[in-house]
Length: 581
Image 1 (tube, rainbow, N blue to C red):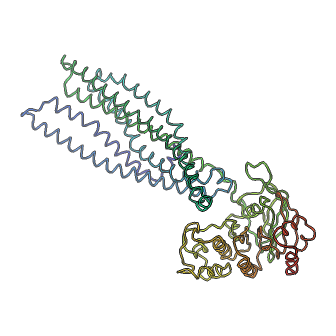
Image 2: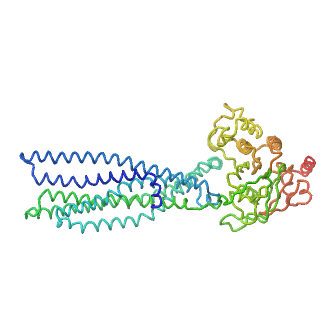
């Protein structure tokens, strides 16, 4: 929790104002019982009217000052906490943006969402409480003890019994609730995960008629969180009754002991009432501290979770001595091996090949053979375990990430569609692209074919995730996004799988013209998509089993031949050879 305090530093003046106002509020709280005791000791008689008006006027004045101080204090403390949490949320988001896929997998998407939202909300509430209650409670408690002792030391000795009882109760509750708060935040992560899967997988869930199954999953996670929250709240709820019992018995003891001293003429009624007020304020301060002990443990857990993310160093870092490639986009893999963090088996082993501008390199293989991993390594979503990947002779680890990814047009295996218009999805925040660039990219990717049938063409708004589009339409938008900026390198990760053969052929024909001077790497499962590539790389279990043209591989590579004949007839395969000549 302490590490998050530095976010209050830019707003120190707000914190200082809050502390000063807290001191004013605390001083008035301590001053009022003394004024009241003066009136009681003086007695309310006709001869004391002027004195009563004088002291009463002081009470009204300081009470007004206290009300004004509390209002301003609420504003300044809230403003400082909100601004600090905004900065913290920004830093957390920037940190997450810098993470490689390895760090994202480590924390999970659901957990990162919870940390950015719920956890920071808990910290924000704690910062408000710390500025107000944490400072006020000790001041009032210590000040009240001093004032009570000044009024009557013997009567104040009752605190030697009541304060240890209150402290013991708070310690017991704190020790019980801290582990539960940690568990509760993890269960919020779990609930978010189930809910996210429920929303994103709605079509599959309905297709398999598993609404009841998902409902039970959610109810189980929800009930688990509810039970933990109820347990925490029950434990926290115990402290208030305990403190009230201690307070009431303390008041009874004070009245009993005070009445005896008044009877003996050793104490005035006003002084006894003042001591009673101060003792009540002391115990109320402990109640306030107990409330803090209910809020702060949860905020402390949230702060630990946020700091854990902020202190995690991304495995993909900017190069210390950046080098910019000056060639046309030649990609070279030199004895590249890679295994995913925590994985037992190697995903890629001794991969070596060269992809050149003006040529299409295709990668084919069974599921899990490492096709997508190769593209991920080029983009530096992960770094190679062994070997090197070079672009124009420069290791990708020496190229600034912005420059590296700026020279690549990437269409992922799963088309990602954002809320907004079709044109906005193609532009994707690249303001330097003109409307003509967007239209041309849409034309090449055959987006205009379906966009022109919509009410506003490319300016038609689509739902988040593209739920109102077909799989093929989403893939075409993804392709248009990749080619709109006319990069030097194109990576297509099985981007044509949802297209019908006719559309697939049209898109590839237009792409070949558009990318004739660029380096193109296509990952595909469908043989028809890659038969005409200049070179085809056959992968199996993370190893290259063959490199060559369609004709060469059909003659010499049994694995490739099996893949081809499992999808098309031998006559079609031969026809592909002839057409490729």
